[in-house]
Image 1 (cartoon, rainbow, N blue to C red):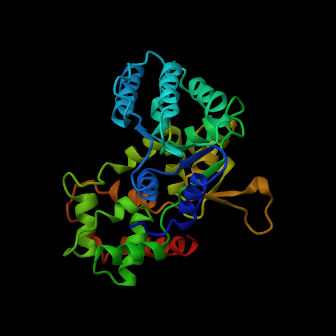
Image 2: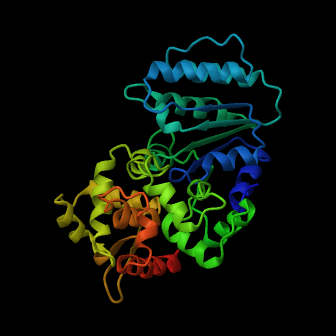
Image 3: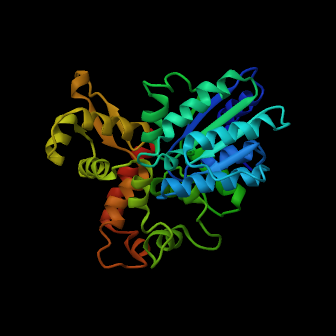
Length: 357
């Protein structure tokens, strides 16, 4: 069962009914439910689907692509030696498909773009030179590396310029959708507990899926974050590494913003991270805003150049306040600190941000 996502499903299903070929880019942060949305919408039935390999060499990426073609029915598919050949094999396979609409799902596309692989030029050639000239192709590309999707595809100034016909920036669940999720999973949580849980987890479906029946909210949070080998104990670095090719500079910015609850100006951020105010900082701030980690606003009577950047991501704020501070590796850290002054202060600020969500 899909919670929410009605507009996103409408876009995907409309593309399948289109008179023309469609190139759809689906992006959003790690664990927000991109792959699940696409698979559920199409009933897990695709003419061809493939998922890129994390941290793999070009040779292995190409071998994996050939295996996916064989799984789809291209039994004697050879191993391609380049991405140009790989997409040529894909077009050959699709020409012989009897599907009225050929639904192609390429998941974790950024992972396929390994150094010196010429992946982008081959992908451009496949879409511009073959797929877009037909009327029966729905190509869905997806990835957690939002910066890659935005810079290499959506905002590309080369062969993919203005080629994306639909884009879906998948957002976290709203508070209401989290309540629906809880009800669907049969978890016994009242609205106060759901709100507090949202203040910790944000609206990330995968995080909510870790909540266990029979445990209190405090016990669940301890088990997920603070227990030895907790499922999300190392999530922070994985989260930023999955979204950004060079995560260190993004982490530097959110770390600086995490120290000032009301936010900081661009100049204050520049001073805090000890980096020059240049195009790189603009890119980092824009991409963090795209991903929903920060918000940009102008104070009353202030000029646009004096805009404030504020960290608003619930999980990141929780990490800085509690996980990073758990120096003693206390597996019951949350349960024992629930009545502390630190917890009460955090609750007030977190609730303010919840109201802005």
